[in-house]
Every structure is written in structure tokens, then in C-alpha cells.
Image (cartoon, rainbow over all chains, first blue to last red; front, side):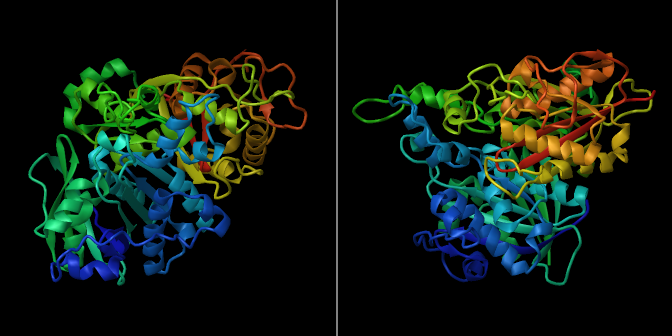
Length: 263
Length: 317
């Protein structure tokens, strides 16, 4: 299968404050410490839009912004895939709560922010980007599924594709039915054409379900196991090590995604 | 593009792991969560024990159910881009097949009525109090509908006498979360790309199934986009007068309508639209017309400025 270059990466989670700052933890030189999540500001959004946006939107846009800044490319030429298991559950909780009240006062802002493609919409507005974007969910397998979609899109359009995977803890009472402990967001800028600047070359292969990679660092492994977007952490660790390797990611009830990584 | 009952036979032919599942939905089963929130424990605030988030509300549940029901083990995803969801499911399936992640695809869309969309569209002032009237001078909003539809997408063979997906185009408006770009810039881009991918000239297209939600601004923006790409002569109509706006299922519903129109030679009129808005110039057809069709386009646009156009044709075999 044709390779893809990973041009740049954005990363934000407790104890992982940006791609460059996280490298020591990802290569195992320093233990992961579950520091509180750095505040995602998403300065790309105009102030009047930023005021109305949620933590979910800001988290997704922050990593997208970091990856694009690292690549120093033109975001207007880049297509996007946004992968999230559950989207913005804070907004869904507010709407479902409003629907229990007299006259069902659903906020128009909450309603338009309730769609799964809200971060994609804000991203295209903030970057004036008219390229296609796709927003998807595959529950616990959203990261690997998003990576396949991003790769297929990059090859089909012969264009760079930004994959953004993000998931956040759900608010009570939904939290009791969907257990996500810590927020996690990652963005990978993929290029069907390899460049000098690349972080890695990757080749994808869908395989029947088998053992998937786990992480030695207990803090990172907890993040990985608890958040669908963090299921991509073994790939990030492999890229950070700047060495060749094979990574197995969970890609479905019956499937795994093998990612061959080379420098 | 075949019929869903072929999927059992297709499973034997391709293998369960080589057929992908691509399902578009806007709200999935959020109705189950709405219902559970009305039954919260008054003391603890907890949801009732019967509530199953994963298999109802979660966006993936529609694709997960489809995958399990059909016994397929290939790639499966739910595409959720508001009202373009199940149109974009075709584009995603095509790409996955081209990339070799699967050899065939079950492509579908599902959205059911829920209070979130009913009250949400009312809060935005986008819902009509009457059945919707696309392109009518008195149009005043959309009617929320519900639908589900599925097709089997396979690579065409020369001997096939079926409807073919010839091209797709996708774009983003980069304009506003809920309002379409006033000039329909993103919509025009999606239509142009669908034509370009199929190497088809605008004048070759025999019919356009419009997104046509019947909100004053959406129809005006789409009208400008259609005029820019096709001019005023290409026959077009919105079937949302018949179905209402089926949101995330609109793409699949209207793709199937277009397939049937191609097979049977029909340009459907617009139900409930009586007086065409003279400010709009696209060639809308108000009454059914029977005539052979070879190429037809279907438009689907959604919140967040997400646009998708699909070009279908009759195979010449």
C-alpha cells in the first residue's frame, strides 16, 4: 500500500502539552504525569466566535492549529477528517435537560453546536478553507477509522489531509453510561507526497482482530485505555522514537489497523 | 448501485470482511437520551437503568447495528455532517473502495424524529408551520421528516444495467455555522467537482434533485449556485415537499429517488409549491414530467457549511 507522510502533529491531553513538549514522555525518557489539561485557547477563532464555543470545539481546534502551525502550510488547501466517538456531550446534555423543562427552551446556539461536525465547521470558518471535511464516529475505534478515512481521502484527492481525533469526559448523568476519564485530542497532517520535513512515513493495512499495542508507561496506558482518541498513542510514541516499527491499533470489533512506521 | 437484498449474496461473493458499512446520521438515537432525561431519578439525578447510551444515542450505533444485522466485519463508520451525512457516505465509501480498504460497501442513512431537531429548528426560526414549499414565493421554512435508506455500492461491470455513481463533489462554505453562503459558493464548488470527477459538462445533466429545504435563504443560495453552474435551463426540483427534510437521511433518500427517476424516466414535480418565487431563476419543475434521463445530480448541504453533490447515470449497456 502507498505510504503517507506525517508532516506534523498537534497534541493536547493532561500531561501532554503540545507535540514538541510531549516527546520526552512519548519516548519513555520521562514518566507521564497527569497534570491538569492546559487550557485550549484556539486563538485562530475570532474573539466573538471563541466566546460562544465549548471546551470540545476549542480542544479540537487547538490541536488542528498546532499541527498546521508546525507544517507552516496553507490551511486553505488542506482537507480534514474529524473523528470523535461522541462529539460534544456537554451541549447534548444541555439540550436534553432543556427538553425536560416547560416549553422546552432549546437554545439556538446549542442546537447548531449539537451537530457532530461543529468543530469542522468552525475550523473551515476560522481558516477560510473550502476543502472537503468529514466528521465520523466509530465508537472506541474512532481513531483508527479516522486514520483510514484520512488516508483514503489523501490518496483520492491527491491532497494533504488533517486528521483531528478528540474525545472528552461526558458530564453527569451521561458519564455513568460512557466512561471517559480525561480529555484527549490529537491532529496529524498527512501528505500523500513525502517531504523532507516529515515526522514519519506510514503504511496502513487492515487486519483481522489481534493483539493491539499497549504502552509501558502506566500514565500513558491509562490515557490510551480510557479515551477513544488516545487509542492512537502507540502510533504517536512510534513516531516520536524516530525509528522504524510496526504498530497495531484497534480498528473494530473484528479488526486491527497495522501501521508500518518508518522515518 | 444495487439493492439491499443483494447484500447476502454479496457477502458470499466478497467475504464479510471486505464489505464496508458507511451510514450517515445527524442525531442518531438521541431520542432515547431525551426520553431517559425525562425519567431521571428525582433524588440522585441518575438516568433509568434501561438507558443504553452505546446502542442508541452514540453516533456510531446506526452503523454498528447495520454491521451486526448484516453480519459484516469490514470497515464500519458513521458519518455525521448534519444534513449532508448520507450523501457524504457515498464519497467515503468510494474512497475506501479505491484505497482497497474494502471491495464493496453498504451505504445508508438514518434519521428519526426527535425533540432536539423539532425544537432546535423552531428556535432558529427555520421550521415552517405548514408542509414545506420549496422555491415557492411564500416558502417560510422546512418540515422535519424522518427516513432510512440503504444501497449496495459495487464497482460497475460492463454488463451491468444499473444506475451508476459517476462522481461526487464535496466542499465547505467557510462562512457561517447555520446560514448558507449567500452566493452559494461552496454549493457551486461541490456541483462543479462532481461534474469534473465524471468528466461531464453541465449541459449533459438531465435533472437536478435540489437540496431545496424551503427556508427562504437556503433556496435562494442554492438557486444562485445552480444558476452559476448550470444556467436556467436544467430541469430541477426538490422532493422535500413530499418527504419533508429527512436531515442526515436526505442524501440517501434523494440518491434513491434519483436512481428511480433514471430507471423510470421521471422528473418529479414539487408537492405543495404553487407559485414559483420570481426572484429565483433555476429551472424548477412543479409538475411531474415523464422523459428519458441519462444523467442526474443530487445536492445535500448541512450546518457547518458542509456540501456534497452526487452525480448518477444510467449505464449505457
